[in-house]
Amino acid sequence: MRRVLTAAVVGAVVGAMVGAVVVLLALAGCSSDDEPSSLVDEAGYHIRNDAAYYLNAFPGKAFQIDGADAATFEVFDRTYARDRQHVYINGHPLEGADAGSFQLLDRPGFAKDRNRVYQHDQPISGDPANFVFLGSDLSRDSVNVYWTDGSVLSGDPQNFVIIADDDHYLYAKDSGNVFVNGTVIEGASPATFRLTEGAYAVDDAAAFYFDAQIPGADVGAFRPLEGPYAADNARVYWMGKTIPGADPATFEVLNKNFECAADRAGAYYRNTVIATADPATFPPGRMATGCSETGISFGD
Image (cartoon, rainbow, N blue to C red; front, side, top):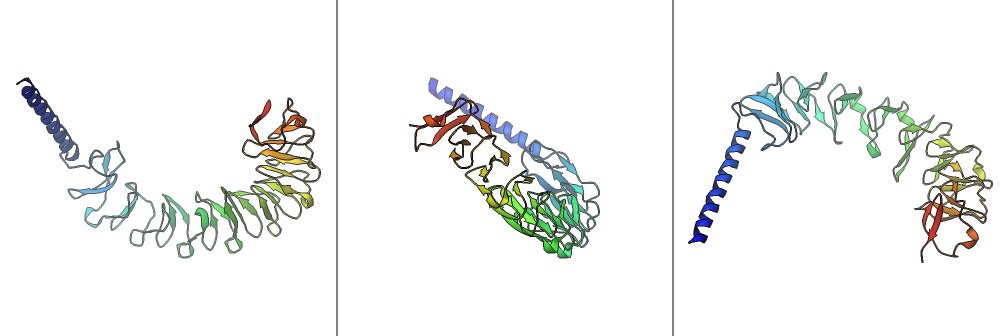
């Protein structure tokens, strides 16, 4: 008898809780004017009672879009919409956009009308007829090449070429400049510039690491090593910086991931001499398993 009463009580309590949840959801989803609620509706645009709303993602609230024409309201995606007179982005008017010709482009966050190309809410190009996407989020029209944030990267689109787009490095050039990840490599010659390995590159007069020229590097003898290391006949470099005292003839990378290296006289962590390390005591043929400014270790 006791078990039956307990089960009945539990059932009644659960039923009451379910009923309360249903009531709460109903109240949240159906207010007096039926505004959308992030508890029950997806974020984005909604039409309720002849009014257009934009609902921010949970736990955001909805707001009515002032002046929107619900009868002609058209939703493109969660971000963009239009009616017969206006274009909207995240529920707000996209100033200057032409509703009749507005359309989304093939890359998220980009759209155009007959007059402009937009990246999110910013007009970036006034030449929509000639606007095209390039690799790795670049774009161009007949006037400019645009970087990933919509800023102008090059004013020479006819001669713009992507050199390489690998391992987080995007190299490109036009007739006057060489670029890496949207930054001009000062002093680099587009005509003779070439990548070697990693972030190292050379032209006919200088060597470069990423966007910086390496002072005093011998271009004819310059060669990349493993990881962030390189050398010429006079110096060894880590990330383009000279390793003081390192001997390029005997220099060896012991572990590129831990950035450990040594020559016949000393050991190095990045471009710092490990004062306590003696290469003569290193076990032959074994890779370093740890490295710091104060020591180096080897596995079994």
